[in-house]
Image (cartoon, rainbow over all chains, first blue to last red; front, side, top):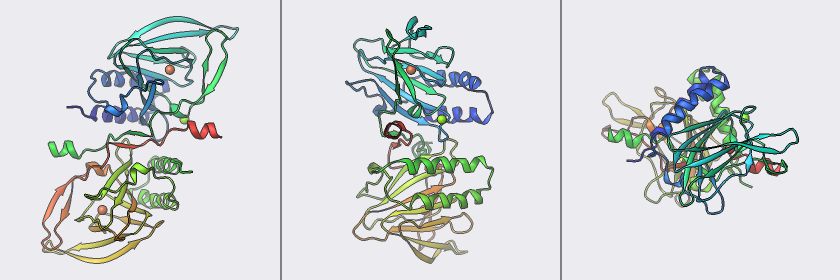
Length: 199
Length: 199
Ligand SMILES: [Fe+3]
Ligand SMILES: [Fe+3]
Ligand SMILES: [Mg+2]
């Protein structure tokens, strides 16, 4: 049976990392372990947050910390969909849940243009990291030509409020954007009545 | 224009009360002021969380603290709907948003039966308090025979996981229950892209 409890536990455990007074780097490292555990099984994401949109990839908010210290987002890639080259400006984690994703990292040259460094393929259960100043420029795509892929992203802020940029790969031309979210609702993680009744 | 930001600000301000190391009584008192400000205007509750259900009153979760220290619930009363007599076992706040609600408080006699103490009518903008050991037994009803009423409840726990009881008024017979929630989704408070773009 599908159940929301792995996501509820992930959110509670991630929140508690902040109570321990860890550095951002330590939160990201510990958080990567929590995310690896979350994406080990693909049986907890509610169906409304798995739906591809034919027009563009979807970014469904699953949880935002009420103090906006971190956010958890379901990225749903329809067949052939990809992001433009973009940055984040806050730390990020990508946990692969379903399908296959390609991530191409870029470096910026002194003249403002970009060159690709390497492309990695993420398989279900794998986790990748992004860190400003280290590897903050990438282009992400569904690596499957005919199926939906889904990855769970965690960011060190409310990513739906961060002003950041997309870039034209060839010219380096920068365009400011705030990504927002694809849905006006998030999953209710907190109904414990059914499990309690079943127990 | 309707906007979610009053609810977002309420959630953030309420969360910060816990960082100040206040007692539960002080959190409830400060929280009552925050709730009074929230229900001063009825222009922020998203429509899916205002819908009456002909079968019974609805309890839509609007926010649960990720450490389950408090929860915020929209109670939607269809015409003529009411609760059974019940308790809470955690502190509570009721902020009237729309329509009119009647709240009848009860005291329990040594023989386990109940008697009504008083009935109060809540009007939009008003806030009432519940405190275990002081006034934890009540029966709440829509005071309007032909219209929906809505109140915003805050509890000092995830009320969707608290084991508590309903009572037969005449005999005092107790029935354990966990109230749960009427919806599998909660409002997304965190999309700041639209406001930012408008600014
Ligand atoms: Fe990215
Ligand atoms: Fe009640
Ligand atoms: Mg921030």
